Length: 368
Ligand code: BG6
Image 1 (cartoon, helix red, strand yellow):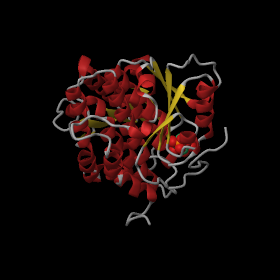
Image 2: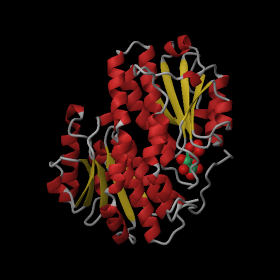
Image 3: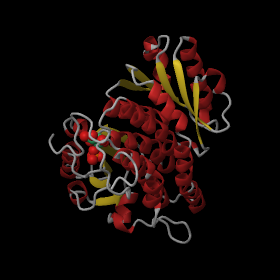
């Protein structure tokens, strides 16, 4: 049942090329137009949407953070991302032109369900991105876009996360298409997305080094994760995976925040993962993050750098460079997340922990 792997988590991490490919499957016609027949919200209502609020918990909320960058970029609709339990109890400003998008693997997370019910009561349109057919959240939403990751058994989410990000890209491109974005531009992003599964496979095939590093870090007490732009939610997810699987104190930060506080934590030997933006990123973001690496390295941090193939600028400041294939900057989380998942899995294994069933956690939390 574990397909030759020792744990469900290892199996599910390795299924990610399929999770992404299957979530893209059947969502375009022969001309490359997106067709989301399952969506069931009238096109006029979707066209009238003037604000999107994404609600989710845990890993799914980081998929929501990635979605914000892409959806705003492609649609120019303002997107807010909020933890479902915070949205529910703070009198949010939503109306019938607000699309509330929930993201949930299980479709049963009570905090997320309560947020969706609240959105419905306030008259918003509700759309669920969900991995479980017939579960409660999609049933109570006006529309659903299923992720096709297949059943996820390990408690901590991996393949569902990549599928959620993929589905949110599909949603963003679909909304852009409805709002008149040129078909060629949408088709171009879809073409890039179709190439992602084999790039994920390439990342998976190159993980020996990450496994070795994890093995030698099993007595580490704290790990920091830095990222910027879409790499910021990836850093948050890398930290969450390490907490969940290896019970190690971990924190994710926006790299731009470094000088506003976290740099005080840097002392000799402190391991820091840095998710480096593509050298093609706008606004010189790549150079800014390379400077951050330089700053923390100068203070003795051990720098574990996730960077695009061919990005040589990081090399002088990196103790370890982990390579991912080049992809358009907005799509990078589908690749840069993978080494962080593998790292957490291996560290957990090296510590002899139960990777699939971490202490105190449940796969779907059906209480508030
Ligand atoms: C947590 C799980 O309780 O719920 C996380 O441990 C998960 O892995 C989170 O990300 C949200 O779950 P779901 O099913 O709503 O995506």
